[in-house]
Length: 274
Length: 312
Image (cartoon, rainbow over all chains, first blue to last red; front, side, top):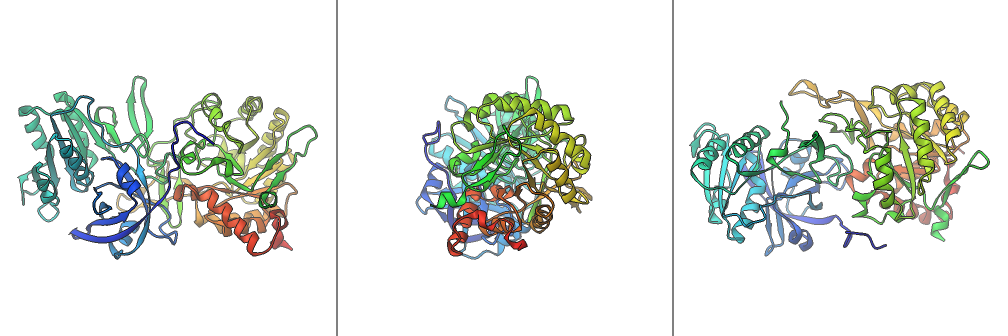
């Protein structure tokens, strides 16, 4: 049957783990060889929903933002920390293991209609993951890109080299000051936003940080987008488990992080109070 | 013919009322399949026996506050809270989409009173493309309505008979497992005029976050689904098969064809796939293929020959 808007059926892709890189204790970068269709259609800010084991345990897939796409190598990279059953299994996974991948899913970062001159990416901890893919695409489009990364300490500070390799101006903050600026990445943004012209800010990280970014950008009149992380089951918009509160004229309503998100306009998100 | 061997029927019990004929016994379970749109990107909806749409209420419902979902051992606990656009928006915006397909549509309805069930049944009966009504007396998430009805045999019979008078569509009563004697409640649904029962809805459950030292779900309790509840569901299907003479739609943790065959052997005429859809968007068709393979391997010509066979 010919359906409106449906060009071809989506499907699960098979991936094969090529290798894993330890970023720090309990944090890994997994590089997976997979189908070109998946790689070519992926946009920054979108995510993949990964079936880690074929045995059915853990039951649900695990969502990961797309950290890197390497078309030449035919790989997708995921950056993750060991936080539960799924990621514990992943950390033990060896090269050659097959995983099932749904994706790319969700709505990624969008940029203003007119080509921006300067985009700032701001990431906290693992929230830096989708920003590398984003930076790569911005650089390809010849858009001036600055990245501000915040971490707890030197031990967890990562990806500086990856961003610098792209030729992106990179700032690092750590809470304890063991490397880079002492403090939060939002402090760097605050300073920058008052002295430089910024057309758009894209952020991913702890909600408290993204909330702060939203407030700073709102005050400065700069468009900002946030990438939210919510617990989800299906990843395709059916279970309604991952809803987030979005402002509207009438007050607010729920939207799905997996479908309308995970990226939302910062000014429209009602952040959790706790 | 393979299609012929998979056809199952829920016959009308009252003269002048409609029967439900499914080309195959696999139904997408209510609340796990939206209104089909999301999954139409992954599978041909016409290959399904039926779609039980997301639970409908008279007016739109925003659902419960988050967190509303948590994964537990081989299962998921949810307290979505019947988030849905309401019956009128469903008719205006979702039925035209579903009517593009020949797959049967089962409208799942939840009311807070007998009157609400009656109003919705009447309204949906006039809609082209609605093939059956599934009466949700068992959703454990709503403080008013659902929980009370499902555990009260008189109310189950009362709602069923009221809906029977309001519609000529097949009536399926969805039973809650959170009761003392599910066989008795099924009999009361049958007495009220139900053409079939579907079972089981989710099992009331909870999870606690030991770091926050608080319940994980905002609503504290939710409904457990997935493989974790399959043995409970099977046992209750078995009991109800021995209690009533109307068909059973079996569900609870069906992930593949073998799981589905277990339910058929326990007495189910058809099966629903719920949580499985969340794991694999193609789960319903995988289950169907697995059932076909089973019939093939066991040289059985018709799925109907297997219904309740484990009781013999």
